[in-house]
Amino acid sequence: MGNEAIHNPAPGAARGYEAIHRCLFLFRFTLILLLLALYHFSGASANLADGLLDRFGDAPLRIRFLYLTITLFGYYALLFPLSVYDGFVIEHRFGQSLQTFRNWFGDSLKEYAVDLCLFLLFFSVLYAFLNASPHGWWLAATGFYLVGVVLLAFVAPVLLLPWFFTLEPLDDQDLADAISSFFAEMKMPVSGVYRWGLGEKTRAANAAFVGLGASRRILLSDTLLDRYSREEILAVLAHEVGHHRHRDIPRLLGLSVALAALIFFLTARSLHAWTLAVGLSRSPGDIALFPILLLYLLLFSLPALPLLNAYSRSREYAADAYAVAAVGGAEPLVTALQRMTDQNLVDPLPPRWVETLLHSHPSIARRVAHARAVPLPPKSTS
Ligand SMILES: [Zn+2]
Image (cartoon, rainbow, N blue to C red; front, side):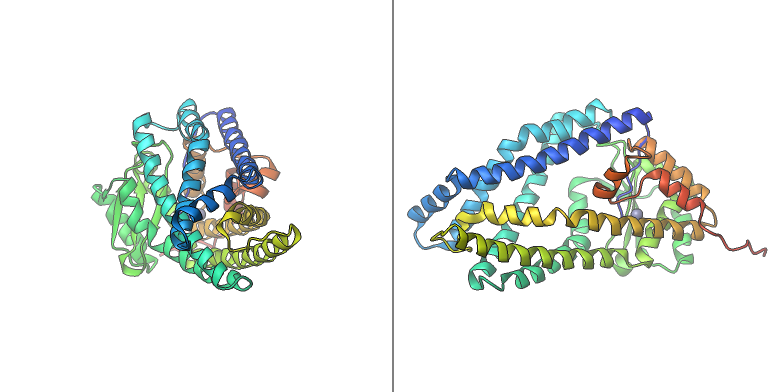
């Protein structure tokens, strides 16, 4: 969607870079499952929950809040070395990040703060539903998830982006005019075009629309503005307009909410069955069983990821086709995509299974082939 990273070192480097990130992603996921199992079966989770109960008595909200906060801090501490390796060491080894450690760590703290708020909010509400309705909570959880993803998709970029990046009005007036008239032609109102300061953090390029309706703003990363021709920038923007015209964000949100309903439903059933099967005196809504709840949620989410990715890739092809038709040819989009491959250290043709399971965007090589195959209407002479 709005995340078209742009990158271009040697093909071997891109392949190595992606392979390392892929391994780390799978490693981290497996490690989380193991840690959750360990947290539960060692009795540590029950000890924490019972200790808080002894200390604070019958104050379920406060106990859950403290339990979740302590648990997440434990997770941050245990996985911090992996985060440094993944987010800092690897990025520097491949020349992708320009941040100092101090700078990177500052950003990480901000991300942790955002994560902590979302995590506490999500699970506090989930546990309130779980205790109010041990069988029907999955439905309320789905409704809450729907509200949450809509807010995150439309509100968060407006609120959070300025916290992480510098945004300033585009200083190149010619380009700003060209973009404005391009959008007027597409009959899409925008309130401004901004230079998005990615360059101090990364070499990758990106473009995004944020906000709704007439307050919609276009963000173009400095890494895009400094390296791409005007035609290429317009082709990248036309791709984003394609997503907008095809209503791809609501479509993907709709699919993810349907999948979330299924995941919550299966988790509710499994958690209930599990407490009965092991003859626990604890109810499913007891915070001591949080590791089991989260294990079920993660396991049932696993098959949802390739499904969402497959749908997302089909929307990317459609947005590319829209862009090719809008700018009247495939070449500007093709050269922009190729520039991104180099700049963002993207493997242009990753193994098929990797793309199928893990990638929300088709490989660059396939996108280029698709873009060139889009039929164009005969040029009208005027
Ligand atoms: Zn896209």
